[in-house]
Image (cartoon, rainbow, N blue to C red):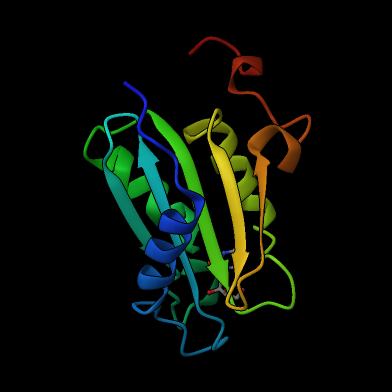
Amino acid sequence: MTPVINPQQLIDAAKDARTYAYAPYSRFLVGAVVLTRDGQLFKGCNIENAAYPSTNCAERVAMQSAWAVGARDIVALAVVADTPGPVSPCGGCRQVMAELAKDAVVFLANMHGQWVETSVAQLLPGAFDPRDLPPA
Ligand code: THU
């Protein structure tokens, strides 16, 4: 069963997630949400750290929250931030999407009501493919 994908509903959920962002260093608040095929929503926000590289992006928190409870079939992902146009996910998040949410429809939004629909393949053409790794 595939749930109805309602972009505005997902963006609203991502906006709600954004209210929990912990971004005392950048002051840049990001919210994300993933929808799994069985209709579950998992939210994420960016969670920074004084040791800056230990920061987690909102998209990764959302995807990894789903995977952490065995919910691996992600059909949609939405992300929102206060950017002039729809927010652009960082390269690291794009690579993680390519592995954890590769078939997801992706909605990129801002706080001014603008959003676009895209895909993981469009966001990261030629992503590093884990199948290129030698057998373990
Ligand atoms: N950030 C995200 O949460 N997602 C992105 O795709 C871009 C960047 C966060 C990380 C950091 O907390 C802040 O935004 C500024 O880079």
